[in-house]
Length: 167
Image (cartoon, rainbow, N blue to C red; front, side):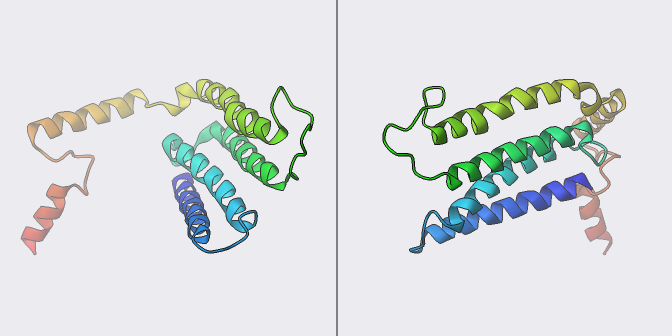
C-alpha cells in the first residue's frame, strides 16, 4: 500500500513539475502558480523517491515521520521563499546570508541532512534485508546463473514465452 501511495505522489509531483515547465513556455507571471507548482512538486518527487526506496513488507515503518518532516521542510521552505517580499538593500542578514538564501541553503539544504541519516540509522536493522530475504536473493541468483528461471519469479520472461508457445 505504501508503494502505491509513493508512486501516486511521484506521479503527482512529476505532473506538477511538468506543468510548471509548460507554463514557462507561455507569458505568465513567473511569481504565480508555476513557481509554487515547481516547489511543491519537487518536494513531492524527492520524498516519494525516498519512500519507494524504503518500502519493505508493504510499508516504510518508522520512517513515516522523518519523511513527513522532510516533505514539510522542503515544501515549506520553497513556499516561504516564494511568499517572502523582496528584500531591500541593506536588509539584515541571517548567518551572513540574505533571508531567502538562508532558507534555501540552511533549511532546504542542511536541515534534512541532519534528520534523515539519523532516521535511517535508527531503523537500519528493521529496514534492511533479513537473513531469509538474503537467502531468497542468493537462491534466485544461483538459479539465474544455471540458466533456469527463478522459482520466486513466476512472471519471468521464460514463463511468458512458455505461455505464448502453449497458445
